[in-house]
Image (cartoon, rainbow, N blue to C red):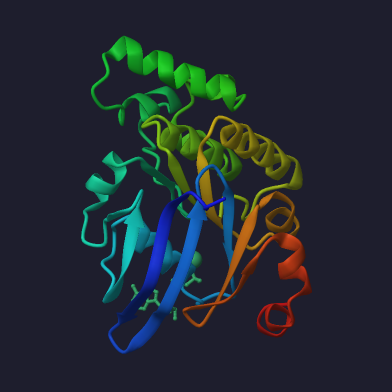
Length: 235
Ligand code: ADP
Ligand code: MG
């Protein structure tokens, strides 16, 4: 059976001044999969995400979303085409409540519809208790959950998550894992970067390992665990 890819990254190059961040990286993300990217610090993971999300332009290579070339598209275009994202560092508004943070990014909805959708997401993520808290009052872990809720407000078909598990306790990590699996069951594609090997190896259908701006290995978690190249570069 042919693979149904929602996202294709084809030979992407990106340098900052003289520093090469991506050096011909290629990968595929299957529809409704959980696909992970791991790699040492500085290997180009965030650069890759920023290029897919349209925040950075590749120097060479292409990004295909549902078969369409979006290499030169703006972040707003990419968002309209169904790509949602969370950031490594929270971008919630500190002077708005959690509910307001969610409602503020709704597009084309009445206030009533936006509040309904926001409440549904807070329920799904089991954080209705945070509804009226100010952005500035949230703990680091709470921010991560609210960021996920906020990205879901736009009903993406693909979610990019930059280090959703970094710096939070194992109990909350496990809750986020459950939620991500729930989202995948609803048909969402999840594409994430993380360092937490326990989680990455546990949750992903497919993994890509980046080192020095190139994919040095890919496969399912068992294949990655067994790969000599990965061991040498990463573990
Ligand atoms: P990762 O997310 O895997 O840690 P990054 O994509 O952030 O990797 O960085 C890849 C390389 O590009 C690193 O060498 C980093 O120092 C460099 N880099 C990233 N962002 C910038 C920038 N804005 N300006 C200059 N160099 C950068
Ligand atoms: Mg990074």
